[in-house]
Structure formats: structure tokens, C-alpha cells
Image (cartoon, rainbow, N blue to C red; front, side, top):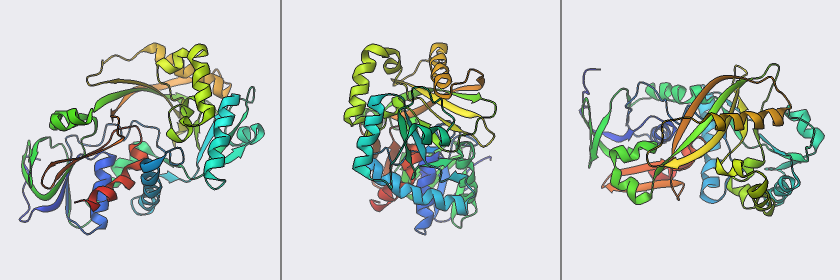
Length: 374
């Protein structure tokens, strides 16, 4: 691609970034009959959109995030039909291995009802997911949650968009600046009536003032791909540490009691901000994670002790010692106090980011809300 050849007419919308948040805005624009140009610096999505669990964690959200997640669920199912994205309606099993964890699930079930939270006995948990029975207090099924083939979803959606009338996908094209009606790239200028910047955790590279005002920093995750012979896990699996992360559970009395106990009994879990959970890839390997560290500029070093902490938790959860690590990686996403950044940059130019770890869960619900304001 030697250069960008402008269209004779500006696009209705230019989307900067072909991660899941940018793609969600392009999908919504197409649904509204708009012409769209998507410009991406890499040859394919390689960031948070492919380094995650492939878990649309709907029920454990609250407030605005819950509304976006519920709306996004319908779009994910549409993308499964129209774009061939691998999406499974298999829900999430939350495993309770302590009395406080069981209490948290009971509180959530009382709040949401049986359609969203189905309490499980220990026997029902082990019949659904292959976790160790020893010390199990029960669990819950969150049936509305989805599993997405995260390694292929962004590519499938981008390929589908490329077949839609009025859509241009520009890859390996770095964006140098944005202004009213104009996006300057390393290959030339693009013109559009609206510009939506979906640069994720690299927002500060393009619009540092916007990132500064929103308090955006980077969240670094350590994650693993693990092979366990003969294990089959259909739903996502969350644990007690997840109850300290997801807002609908973290706000329960049970989760608060668990955090107090872990302050003295398991401080290493809190210090590493562990959300120990797992999902299974189509090939059978488990995606296991994750730990969290926050900074504007992150240290480049992985910590073996954090991987060992995750592996120890996984051995205890599954009651298995025969875990083989296949891959290790770091995930990075944007983090800020407000989980959704929507910042006007100039007339017709808006910066958008999911500044928490729920981009896959909420992006398809956030995008319609953003387009409603343009």
C-alpha cells in the first residue's frame, strides 16, 4: 500500500483503530447506512482484542456497563450469524470455594433472579465444569454470558466489514493526527464528516491531552495458555478472586468479607490484583489469568512469580498437577476511573475507549450510544 487514495467524497465516518472498540463503531455505522473508513496501524488486530479470555461477562456488570453488555450480546449473536464469528451461548460458572463466596452468589441471585443467576450445588458445579470437589461450597451459572473465539473474532468482523458497501479497511497505516474532517496518516490524508478515535491504551500517543484529562493509564496483565489432558470446559469459569473484580459481585457483603479475610490470609492475591479465571480455546488449551499492574508507562518485564501464582491457583481449582504451559503473554488495556471514555476533541471528532477490561463485553453496546450523539 504505497499511499492512500482519497474517495471523491469524504466518508461519513472515519474510525481510527481496528480493535474490537473501533470495529464495533464501524459495524454500527454500517447498520445505520453510513459510509465508513477504518484505518489501523498494524496489519491485523494484535492488542487487547486478541489477548483476552474471549469472555462476554454480562451478568457481573452493573449500571451503564450492564446496559451496554446486554445490548452488545445481541450484536455478538448477529456477528456469529453474519460474519461467522465463533460465539457460544454457554454462560459462566462461578465457583464458590469459601462460605463468603457462596454468600456473594446468593446475594447476586436474590438481586437478579433465576433468569440471570442460577445457584448450583457442589455436585451440580462438578457436573458442569471439571473442578476439584474438595472444599467446594457450590457455585452459580450465569446463563446470559457468552464465549467468543477471541483469537479470530476481530479478523472475522474486519473481513465481514470489508464486504459491506461503502466500507474501506486501511491496514498498516499509522495515524499521525486528527482534526475537523481530516485524519492525517503516514500514507496521506483521509477526509470524513465524523472521526471516531478508538486507539485504546495508546490514546496518549495520539491525543495526550485527552488521555491526561481522563487520567488514562495502562493496565498490564500476565496470562497463560495451558494444556491439561482430557479437560473439557464449555463455559467460562470464575473464582472467588473474580468476585473481588466484577462490580455486581464485588459490592456484595460476601465479597467484602472475603476481601477482609484475604487481607491477612492471602495478601499475595490482593497485591497482584488477581482475577483467576479460565476459558477453553477451540483447540482445547485453557486460557488462564490474570494479574494486573497499572502505570502510564509499564515495565517491560514479566514476573515469573505471578505466573507461578496463577498456575498454583489453577492446579488447586482443577485438582490436577499435569499442567503444561504452552504460551505466556502480556495483555495491555486502557484504565481510568470512568470505565467509558467519550471525549469531544474537535467538532465532529470524538475519542472513545473502554477504559477497563470489558471491551469485548461492552463495545457493541457502547458504539450505538456514541453514534447517537454524533
